[in-house]
Amino acid sequence: MDDILGIGVAGNFAGHLSQAGEDKDFNTTDDDAPKGIFPFYVPYDNADALGRYCINNQNIILPSDSNLCVQAEPEVGLECDLIYDENKKVIDIVPNFFMAFNDASVRNDKNATKLSQKKNFSTGSKAYGNKIPIDNFHEGGICDSYTLASFIRFDSELKAYGEASKLINYSYFHQKLLDWLKDRLNNQKDCSILEDFSKILQCSNYPKKALFAIGATCYSKLGETRFLQENDEIFIVVFNHNKYDLAEIEKILSDSGRSFSPNNDISIIRQKVLRS
Image (cartoon, rainbow, N blue to C red; front, side, top):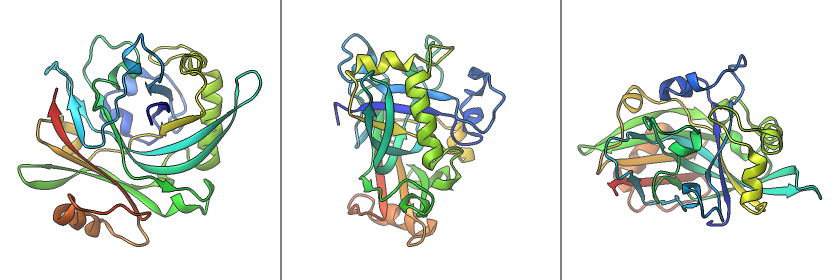
């Protein structure tokens, strides 16, 4: 996955930006629409921290500066093909897989002028779970049967980290999301904390694939107020809610999180928090 462009979506779930303290960075009258996209990994960019491969599916590695505070961001990831025309404009986005995703982010970097500067803070900034094939990314497709949940374990207790949310509760989903992403890839300009994405595509040699983190859900009261600490464990799970309920997912994580065998009904991330 080291040649795939990593892209995040800001503000695609109602309430998350205000919990994260980032709503003030966006000036928009449309509260339901996502606010923009940002890169978290740009392959072939050797001049910037965004060129550092930052996905580690076992560990979240906190920044070396202990004053920087990090929160996990439970999300859904979409692995997609990018199709271009002869002018290098994106004309289609084809989702192939979805998965649990952790878009862990620094919250208090006062030197960051772009959202992306809070995203790639170490070689363990991001993670994704096992990939689940997408039959079609439309209403009635496989994704409609899945829920996103997250947990944190510390002091030997497993507690809710984010609110369990069905994927169809994203503000933009299905074709509406793909159309919006295509527009942002082609037309987003450098503005405030967002970047010109035509330059990002060019810098990454117009990649054929992108991994989209499509937005974080709302935190529990605990998740909203507690920054990650060394030796915490984070679990992010996307599960088929027609086959499992939340209590069963908690039992799986409590009893056999270390040995759970991934399958197409559950995509799971389990990360331990370390200090670099």
